[in-house]
Structures are given as structure tokens and as C-alpha cells.
Image (cartoon, rainbow, N blue to C red; front, side):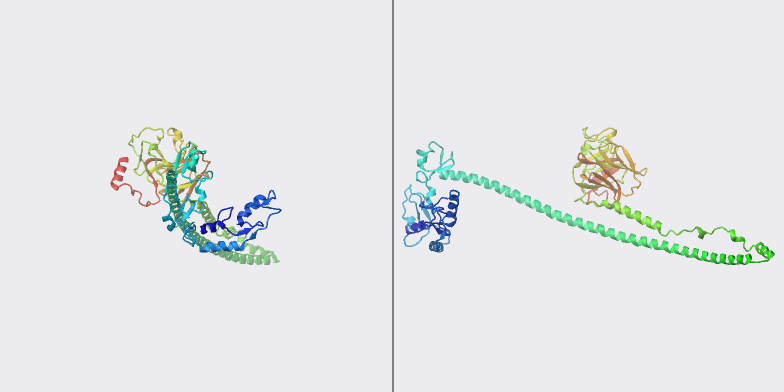
Amino acid sequence: MASVSLIDQLECSICLNLYTDPVTLKCGHNFCRDCIDQVLNSQDEDQVYSCPECRAGFGERPTLQKNITLCNIVDNFHTSTPQDGASIFCSYCVDSLAPAVKSCLHCDASLCDKHLRVHSKAEEHVLSDPSISLQDRRCSLHKKILEYYCTEDATCICVSCCLVGEHQGHKMESLATASEKRKGKLRDILSNLTSKIEETEERVQSLRNRRRETGLKSAREVRNITDLFGDFRRWLLNLEVKALSQISQEEEQVLKTLSNVIQNLEMKKDELSRKMKRIEEMCNMADPLTVLQEVDTGDLGDLEEQRGDEDTFEPYVGVESISHVSQTLSDIIRDLNVTFYVQDPEDILLDLSTADNNIRISPDLRIAAWTRIDQNRPKVPSRFQNFQVVSSTSFDSGRHYWDIEVSESEEWKVGICYPSIDRRGSRSFLGDSEKSWCLHGDQYKDYYSVIHEGKVTQLPHQITSDRVRIYLDYEAGQLSFYEQCDPIIHLHTFTATFTEPLLAALYVWKGHIKMIREEEDPEQFMNISEISADVWEDWWNYCQ
């Protein structure tokens, strides 16, 4: 029992653990410094200090003196303790400190392997894992071993609590049964936590993928912008060289003309000086007959001659070239709006349930073709009756753009509309109400315009490219149309306050128009990867 007595002497009476930085009060009792500090702090309010061990009072807060001897004993005890986790020793080993392998709740003692073999095997001797504080395994009221679990009060109790205590009549379970149930619940919690961890890992991986994709897209955009501005700088340099060369040529031509005019004027000046001198001589003649005869000779008959071209010449160096260059630069600045700061072109798919029965939709939902053959689709409220169709994708925020092939249609309209647009009647046509905006092309008449609320604005520019681009900035309330050529040309921008989601919309007559995907070859309009060439040819012939 020597080891047990030693441990008892090294335990703080407040925390019941081995001393940590032990200090001594005036009464001689020892405590951990942090433990006695907490006790004294609680006594500060009443200014009445006492030892928690013997209740000895102090007139003022006692000074804590470090117990060096006890501190060294505790340090030596820790040093001599085996480091394999066996900090609990056998209660019956007298000569040496042997690590305990079990604790007997009935005997309130810990046992090493040697004493465990000779220990009583009676049922009341309950063995457990080694424990320093065996009191925790006993009922605080009856001082008996805790053997049962009260499910109503969720607490461990002894047999006396079951029979005569406050838990009498409650539903009881053995500790093993209650422990297994608790473990089952813990396993369920662990399973849920495992699932949440897996979901979290999937989200983390998804976000990492998005971060990587964002980095790749950002790098691609940086390259595109770098190339764009590199081309822009080269184009400006060529424009500068051309403009300066043209101005230099015009300057040279004007200077040459000016030199010729100056030379002619100098010659005229000399001739006039000669005539002036002759006239002065005649004015000084005394003989009237000589004066009259000199005038009659006709030498001075050109005094009233008409003004020559040099008298009306006004130098106008290079103004036409400068004006042309300034106008070109203005066009460039205006068309800088062509830089689209969005991730990717939108992949627009057409909504078959909205297509007019005289509009044929391709199997990949990207081509709308006019046909004389009624498609006999179901009559639903969403279907147009005016050669129109809208997209299945809607936009209610952000910036987006998409390209459309329009060259294969005699007349077309492309733009956007609200889902609430009329599906029949005059106000259902794109641009003819406040719910739609469009670019209109009549290639037969070579006439192009933009339309909104029935107001038609003719474009001064004739579209010659096969493609147009639509750019939408929902928050800014801007819808812009561009002609896809080199360089791209801005056609028109609508400004509005959008109040509903927006759909891409098409109108086609005598021909077909197509939503372009980014990966498609612009020179291979008929190349559709989803369907074979034979199927495409049959479909197109059927539309005719």
C-alpha cells in the first residue's frame, strides 16, 4: 500500500490530481498554485480568506510560497513513472511501483498482473480498466458500485438507487446494454458525420475544379485580350504610318503648287515693276505728243487684265486626310465596346414548344428553318403563330453574348423578348411591343433596321457578314448588336430597364438561321456533329 499512500500524499485536495507548481499556506497545507488562486479569487469579494483544507482564517489574502521540496518530489515521481502510459500503480506492491492492469471497484484498489492472478473471482469484485479516481465509479450517495443506467434521468446508479433511492420504479438498463445503445447512436452520428465529410470533400473538390477552370479561362481571356490589343496597336501603327504618309504627300503636292504660284507671282511682280517704271517716265515727259503716242502703242493695254489662278489659290494642307483619320479613330473608339467581359459564349438551345408550325427545328435545337409544310405540333399557349421561336434558356442577371448565322434567310429578326410576350396577333412580332427588341434584316431589299415598341430605326450600315452578335448586360440594361467581321462593327445599342427574365428570340422567312457554338468552324455551316450528313440532307430537303 506504500504506492497508494505516496500518491495520496502527492494529490492536491482541490483538483485531486498530482500537484502542479505546489505552494504552501501559513497553515502548512499545500495546493496547486492555480487551484488555490481560484479559491482565493472567489473569496476576494467578502475579504475573508481561509484554507480550503482546515478552514484556518487569514486577516488578508495570504502570500503563496512555493514548496520547493514538494515540487522536487513531484518531479522525481513523474521521472520514475513508466512512460508507456501506465501512470496508475498496483495498490499491493510494497517494494516497487508496478503498473496496474486492472482496478477492482469492490476493493477500491488497482492490481498488477501478479496480484490480479490471486485476486478474488467473486461476482461482487468488479474489475475495470485502471483508474486513479475509483470514487467516480461509486454512487456518491450509497458508496456502492454503479451497475445500472436510469433511462428516465439519463444517469448511472447503484443497486440501492434502484431499490430504495429516488430512482425506484424507473426503467433501468445494465451499463453494458446502455453503453451499446449509446455506441449505436454514436455510430449513427459518426456515419452522418462521415457522409457530411464526404459531401464536404466533394464540394471542396468541385470548388477546386472551378478554381482551376477559372484560372484557365482567365488565362485564355488574358491571351485573347493581349492578342486583341496587340492587333489593335499594330493596326493603329499602320494607320498612323498611312495617315502621316498621306499628309506628307499632300503637303509635298501643295508646297509644289505654292512654289509654282510664288514663281509666277514673282514674274508678274517684275513685269508690273517694269510697267510702273515706264509709266513714271511717261508721267515726267514734257512733250504731250510723245505721251499720247506711247499710250497708243498698246504697251500698257494689259493694265486691266483679269486675275490669274494664283490670285485665288488658298493652301489647305492635308485637312481631308486628317478628317478621315479622325473619323476612323472615332469609329475604333466606338467599337471598343466589342470587348465582351464574360466567361464564354452562351450555348443557346431553341424551345420546340414555342416554335411556329411553319418553322422546322433541327435535331440539335440550334437551327430554325422556314417551311411550307405544317408541322402539326400540339396547340399550346406558348406556341407562336408568326414564324418565330424563342430559346429554352432565360437570362435574369449577368452579361451574356451569342452569335447567329443569318446569311441563309431572305428575311430575319434576331433579338430578345420577355416570356410574357404575346404569342399571336400583331404585338407578337419581335420589336412590335415594349416586350421585345430586335435587329431586322431584309436581304432581298438590302434593308436593315432595329425595332422596339414598333419604332423602326434604319441602320446606315449595310450588313455584309454572315453573322451577327448579340450582347446583353442585364444589370446595365443594355442590348447591343454587332456585325461579325474583321474588325467587328457595332450596329446599335438599346438601353432599357429590364423587369423580367429575357429569352433569345428568332424570326425567319424563306431560309434558315442558326445559333452558333464556339467550337464550330465558321466556314463549315453545314457541319453538325450530332447528326450524320445523310440525316441532315434529308431534313433540309424536307424543309423545302
